[in-house]
Image (cartoon, rainbow, N blue to C red):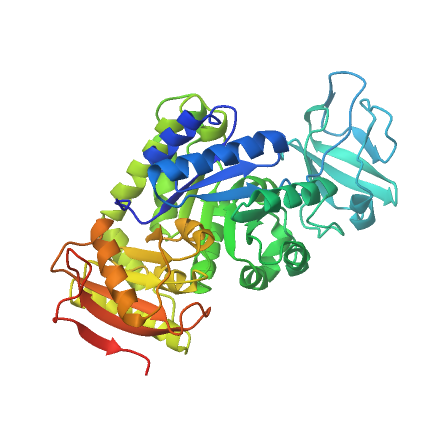
Length: 487
């Protein structure tokens, strides 16, 4: 049966959610895409989780997407002689390439690219932004700094260099190893972390080819000036607010979230809002009202999906967190205001036949109160165009390619179905009618809008639209209305 919501849920797997029964419970609670976080766990751990996901997929009988999220070039300080050091405002502190364990006067930063990019006056953030340093002087292998905001610093804490584009590849050696592992495994999405420039995506694309799709995580302010180019090169976008919020003032993040969602929707790219959405549910059985409002805001903004991280990976209440997110989404999508927002913000269709037919499908479906829109697609582009229109009815995404059906599990409003291939337009219409009835999209006697590209299997050729009547046996009644059909 289709979800009774359009916005999708992504959940991260981890120690609290690695067994078949745990993953099955999460899928039943509402997860559409599972995330494997390469920053934690081993490749062996992730391979076992992937195996369990696919076993659950067979049981629940619907496509489930899998995202492998690469760690990216996370910048960290080295180690200390003691457990930790305490730095106070006004202290002098040296950063260098010397691997010797540090003390209150210095520590190793094993990233020569940082020193190559620094200039006096630059500010550095340590320990997830809790500590702040200012560069007084620097060279190719060191930086002398003044502590502006002090605190406790321990081994391998994170480091950020706001306002600076580092001469650093988006793929570390670990990332390259994890990437090849993920491609061999068969994951659907590769999450590309700490993207700074369009070239980072092109570098990853050269390695990935067509074996998986790229989800670009926007978490570096350096990416913002070229955001339009970055989105155009991506297959999907994640608004990764955690690291983005470290380098930017907190008050800047909500506006950027809305901007990135609008830009991604206009480009027809799925967009996920992530990080700290129900964070109190890591330990508590219910979220704060502010967290519920945060999830709701992402839904009102029109995001394709919202994501859980530690809540489902290591929290005490992973299933409850998914169920709560599901409840929040459904409540928002029943709000008349949500529908008014979606109707008022349709991206302008491009001057192409596929875009024109996708817009027409939405309008016709709403005018005649159709049960849904059925799309036949080999690459997913037809269904994603329908999703971009944010129709009031479900979208049935039919594909003969299991990989495509899994990709569509992330797209707003799409109920993906892996089905046998069709050889003629008449067979396509009959199949759409039958599957719509079987999947609970509509009932016999209701209208169904069917769109596809002919000849079949040719990407990007959505060129036909037909209104049919659903029947119990999949054969269409004579009440069929032909809107457009290729010769």
